[in-house]
Each structure stands twice: as C-alpha cells, then as structure tokens.
Image (cartoon, rainbow, N blue to C red; front, side, top):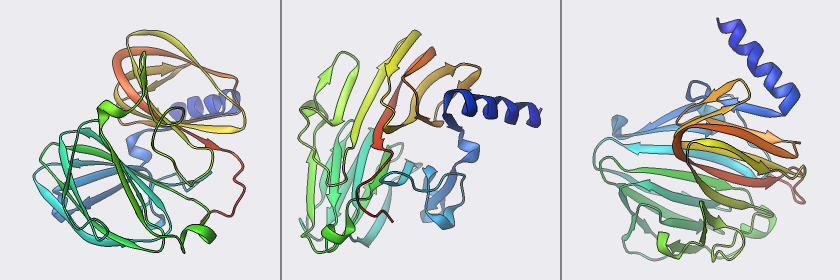
Length: 255
C-alpha cells in the first residue's frame, strides 16, 4: 500500500511538477504544553518535515489554539513575518507599538522586523492562524527600522472568489521580491488556474477537498506547483485555500 502511494506521488511529480505534502509529511510544533499546536509545511531545520526553505519563503506554520494561551515576548530580525487569522481572535503586542492590538478572522498583520523587534501573541481558544516568514534582502533589512502593519479583512481587495492579500490593489507591500498572496474560495466543480513558469505556486488547503489527477488533497495538506502552464483540479468539497506565488530565481542571497 505504501509503495503504491509513493508511486502515485512520483508519477504526479514527474509529469505535472506538483509536490504534495500531507500533514503526515509536515513538521510539528507546540507551545505551552500543547495549548497551541502547529503543523508546518515549511518548518525550521530542527522541526523535521520534508520541505526546506525555497524561493524567498523561509517558514510557514498553521497554528491552532486548544485553549486561551499566550506566546511570550520573543525577538526577530531581518525577516518579514505575516500572520493571517483564519478563525477566531488573537492579540498582538510588540516593542514598537507597546500595546495589545486585537485581530479577528480574515485580518492580516505584517511585521517587517528590520534591525530588531520583539513581539508576543495571545490566541483565544479555537483560533487558527497562519504565520509565514518571507526572506527579503537581509543585507538591506538588517539595518532598516522595524515596521508593523495590520489590515482588516474588509479592506482587502476581493473579486469574485479571490481575496488579494499581497498583489494588485493591496496596501500590503513586502520587501521580499515578486510575492503575490491570494485566498481562493471554491465550490464543487472543475477549475483551472493559469501558471507562470518563472514562479512557484504554493497552496495550503484550509478547508474542503480537491483532486489533482489521481491525488486527493485533504484539509491541511500543502502542495507546490512548478513549471506548468495551468493547474487543473476538481473540487470534491466546498472550501478555500491560500496561494503564495514566489519567484523561482531570487535576485539576492537567501538564508
């Protein structure tokens, strides 16, 4: 059974340039004795998992709070750190603003950590977030002042079933080059997305179910599409997914 499963994934990779990472192949982390748990498509080197940093994507975690819990003050430098609230409510504190900022479902925050900033996060029970780290040109950002931005869900551009977080008409601008971030909602049916060969397309299935050729993609699965002209997929269950478009070639050194 296992060999058959691996064979399907090998065929899918060779002919479609799609890499599929179910939760069993992702890294795992937790805070406060398991009050907050994380599955990480892209974890730190010590976290395990099958995927290492690529393009200018450095880290991607999906965190779930089982009860009210606080991740205490901790430092960052250089990287751009984005949090997207998927469910529930969180609060953010940092040494730049020195106050707790509430965020709710659909809101997005960006910390451009620059020469240094420390922050803390409080998650209410049953809340879920993405935390994603982007790798800018550290030769520049490590000497730049830290910045903080949050954007409410209602202020993100929406067209049909697509919400733009970073991209055309969005107020969120990254120093990490050539990044676009969208959330795609979908109904049951067959769909196609255009793909540019100079980019990785990284997807996290937040809700629902998909079928891409012979592979079933389930909730919390992660997959990467590369070197294709389009992505054809069948939606088996209504849901939504996050897509990050990032360059195959980055013009500056990455970590």
